[in-house]
Length: 362
Image (cartoon, rainbow, N blue to C red; front, side, top):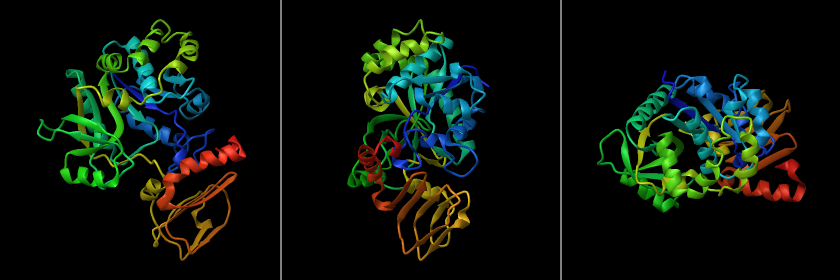
């Protein structure tokens, strides 16, 4: 196992499209949404232990979730839990992690991955990641895994790659923001586009050179912490300076601007579990295509009901009749009943209701 390889797992998001199960006090990465006995964060951590030493795996999270990380991954020491004092999107948190890793190993290669995605083809994922690590260790390249699209999804960013460049790792023409349906269909038909899964592989120096060039303000602010990384002063430096970094995604900061972007197409059984609809796709269905997530699924009884995502976390008998294409989620102090084809509204609805009834509902 290569000690030059590291992993950064991003676990600071709120997962508001998964409301009301994913809440501000305990977002979806800390939940066992698949009913496997492990949270999404734990599954993600386990996925990387064959790729790099466990002590080389870092979790970036918000300061308020540090206790959840320690509770779910008790083998981690405090230096492996990187806590942001504010939510400033992915460019600052990845830069922070990169600078800390560089302090530990000046020639490190590292992977960045979200904590709340699922990978069904674990062996293929490990193979692609190791292939990517080898590539970035030999080339000054910023690499992203690309997922072969199977439908014109408008919820993902797309990667336009040069299919004439040497396989299996392709030069990227450009990153494209989430398209409308018409353009998504054109992307699929062309055969030159992949979904952006938000899984990156790079050498620490290649990444920080790009941050310095294209996200100069982020780099300049955090580079002042060079003497603080891996010391008792690290958190106090972050508390003072991190909130002043620009709130910007790594895609917008460098991946849409740098010239040395490459992609590795990967058939890994990937889902970002971004919505209840995507969770519905992962569960076994009954004869009417209903997916049931519950400690006691037999307590959820359906009559003339089809194509629904149904979840209850309590020992409650639930009877549902004459529903089609709905999301029904019974979670703590909230019951959500919402059309599945309008689930993109849930994030905004949760904010509006929290503003009206209080943060306990967010």
